Image (cartoon, rainbow, N blue to C red; front, side, top):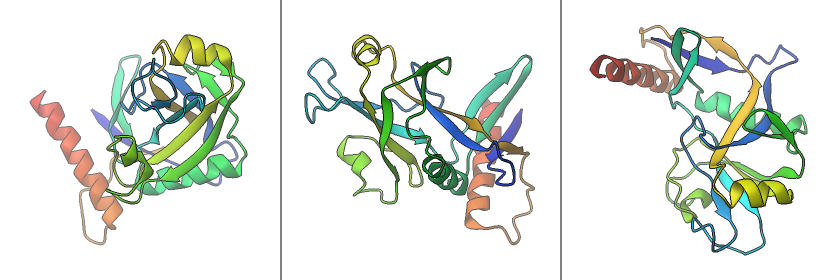
Length: 200
């Protein structure tokens, strides 16, 4: 099965993340924490904040994809995650959101954005989220009553998923001479995926 690294092609005008989608099954397998009320037992900070906090993009995490008969895994390096998070804000896309990648939403805004840099002292740890270093975290304010009442409070949406345009880069060569730490981590990830596929 192919393993594809998605990268940002900064020479292309259409590159980067265009919107954040609230979804039932996030591809990165990380649910968000709804910062609000008793009905949502994940984290109660302020009853009326109506903020969703969660991982937007996790580096070096294999994400299964299927297109017709073609099955493969994609992943993003730490460098791509960082660039994507910065470009998203530089392009002014923080108010772009969709529901399940299908319906454009209004009233959702990315109000906080950060990269996890510390295993112990990161804000994500305060809310019990054990995501790796290099993860792009975000907090989205929900000023849309329908989304909050009918999707968040009911548990119909559980996490974030990004929408955007990336170039792909096929498997890295196995020769580790002269590779950066990032490239070595990516190669290790590829080997882990291959091992899982053989065992499964």
